[in-house]
Length: 396
Ligand SMILES: *Cc1c(COP(=O)(O)O)cnc(C)c1O
Image (cartoon, rainbow, N blue to C red; front, side, top):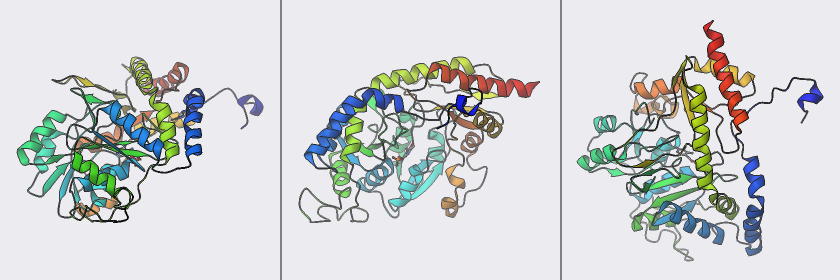
């Protein structure tokens, strides 16, 4: 790659939206040792390294069962199916979240029913959830986004009143806790995604089901491996009572487990670093006209532990700001550009603009900034300066 000096340009080094190159360099001896272990054993999928990761994640989260699968989306589908959700069932999901929260419900054979979000946490709003419950509602699947859990006490109260099962899309929730309980363990079960950009990221796809429920754990464990129980090839053994009795192939690769085990050693340190970076961004961006909202952790009646996974802000003229940052080589992502009730794949549900105003407003004004443990203060300053320049420049 040509350096700025070689091309005669000024030093306008950009800031990538995501990078973990420095982390990998630092962890290389430990990653190499775990990888060598996998190579020597010669079992590359659903092997001993995966089992080791399951045990380590059960310890870290306090879950009775941690079931390794191929990715977070599969984890959601298998969790729903293992919880007995299928054709004829409705599952309430937020309109503002990653597509998988709702597509997993459809993949399990059930129908997603949308509800609006809380403007501060960006998670499912309990009152909106209550307003869409019917006799068909079998489960609710709040998604914990960016920094903190949905209001799980309020959601659980509505669910209890209506006999609805609580499951969690805790794909982003590693390290987040509510009254001492880890994300995913506040209802019948949850998931983790180890997609590379997640707080604990692999070098490819990987995911996990978390649950304290023995039956759900057993079913999810069977479904991930073609319905196989142990070494038998009795492919639908014990799961004929599940929606769609067929299992699937959603095993985790041992190489992903190797990388994840090495990174798990520094996860809490990474989470602390993320908190420091978030505080630095907030300090620099407070008071800039045009910046409408910075991440805010809500005080609850019970102790909670946030984790800054994404640093998401809301701004005026979002698309113009994104163009301004792109011009300066600064990466951004819009989480999420279109609310799910207005996505073409859910057109059949008959929603239109205005149905979930809080979700729609967030889609118009929210943008995620470069944010990861490798980010330097100097890079962070460059991002904050570029945002300040944009809004101050446009004022005069
Ligand atoms: C990342 C994510 C998923 C899906 O995880 P994958 O591992 O990418 O399949 C699901 N829900 C939410 C909220 C996510 O952020």
